[in-house]
Length: 523
Image 1 (cartoon, rainbow, N blue to C red):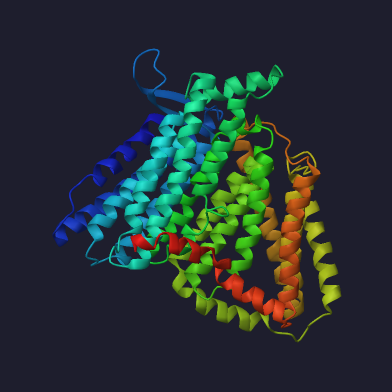
Image 2 (cartoon, helix red, strand yellow):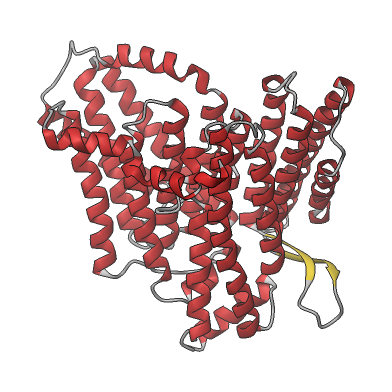
């Protein structure tokens, strides 16, 4: 059944190579073909996952094409818990976007070209997800970047769109160079590109107590660099908020699918990174800082799409923090949940303003307002109780999970902060509903984690990261600063320092302006 996942990928590639239709009938034909193949891929990926689950969730390595018996180069598939979840996600989001685009771009002058490149991009991402070796992964990685570049320049006459595309192009090339160097060193070190053989060799070194070689360390750092450029981590994040001139379905595809490539790379090669001291710890700090930095900038934006863009940067930062702490199952769950949520918000961003106005009207009912101190105390106690009940019911011991204490603390701060705000601004009925909603979210998150953990158990690698007090301190400073900034701004106080901070944050601390100057010649 796993072989069948190649069918829609090949069909998508074929559709991507079709000539641009010049007639309305031809455009409608391409639109229907691409949407139909997207539906076919969704069906096949769902059936493949079902078969994988009933077969005992054993990872499968399938050799499709081999260049010679002893050649390390070939077309291989590696289908395990991680790739099955990602393929289903990409297939579902791709199908939704194709259906949405049929209305959004109906009558667009370049609709035929749009569908061709959408098919190409979905195929490239899908191929990357099921790639069985590092060389094939890189090839699909580059194809994904190329397809996205063509979608970002859908409206080539728009200066901002062209500039954003070229910014993304050059930042992506940094990641490509890092991956090329990592691939060359990987072959020198292990004499293979295939993921199962690479992981087996690394695990054997760990079991035998062989220290990481210089090449292995460099490989780990290069893979991390490639991942942070693709997933818009600081300071490579600026390309994502600039891509606002592209059609909304492209934004949804990019934020819900393509930007996850860096995180998926980290998860995919996690056995190799665990073997490299310092790499995951650095990734945790970079991810934590990116999450807090982008969250502050996000709250100052007036454009809905730009707010969503910085929200994605923050979420990708938190996902990288989870990877850096060794919580790869949580990172996988975060990718799934964020992708579905962000695809929905982009495709429905036209209704955000109306819903926000209605929500503010409901939340700002202060008839049953309670003191801030009592609100904070009550929210913390309630959140702790809900977390403890769920962890007990589902046998989740966060002290035994890598990074569990840090991520549990972040979750506690997030939910209790939100509850404290709601407690001060709603009626008692609203307070009760917010507590029930918090319980529902935490229960859903815990159940989702248990399901993902079970799916990827055979592919997981035991790891304990972030034992360094320096890493814990840096992450604590990042989220402590974010919490302090949030608490101060919620008071409504206005000081010269806060006013200056607001101005700087609303401009993204001028990093976008610096990049715009560098790529001005391409506008």
